[in-house]
Image (cartoon, rainbow, N blue to C red; front, side, top):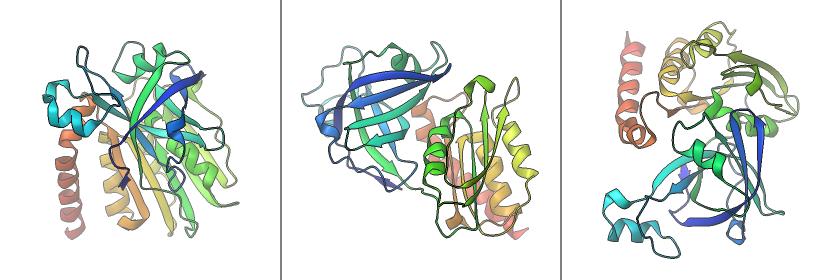
Length: 277
């Protein structure tokens, strides 16, 4: 995974859309977007900065200075979101934010933004793009992974076979997902079931010919199940699999980031034991 140095990019809201009832689409602009290194990967992400109320930050905002001179309690909070689109010619960066009323930090913030409002972020980072050499592609995720899946589908080689499984809360959250590939897309509606339960069932039921390049992201619990399924049961080589928990139910983003390294070690240890059994 690559991360741009922690330079803060300052932008403003150009316009706001609502492609589905629970998605706020932010289109950002500004001179600082010129030369933004977006394009190598289809899962490019940025991290929005959320100032702590009452904290006074240097201008221009500099995270290194803030972390050196201010107590940790005053550091801005960060939230990672996938870049949905970047138009270098127009100087516009598009990001989709899932919105569930007053729940969370980023959703209510995004819903309250208006054209002209300032937005600051660091990044981009990224790691995945669909391999042109794969025999077929598997893309699996919940709403948090939908922007990356959408970009990956747009970048598939013409005619490339792809099986795509996307879980949303209901049919109103479905979006058009155009692709030059030969795509078999299945929308799964969660209803009252745990996040990802339908995705795990659907992946278990798939035929699994060799040569897959897989992208599986979303809530950590179902990602953990699918990681074991793909690595151990299906034998997908690590280098042909991009899989990670974007978020974890019941834990805020800071808590998830703090525990994610240990979570990864535990999962890798489980895989090693299962492979040797």
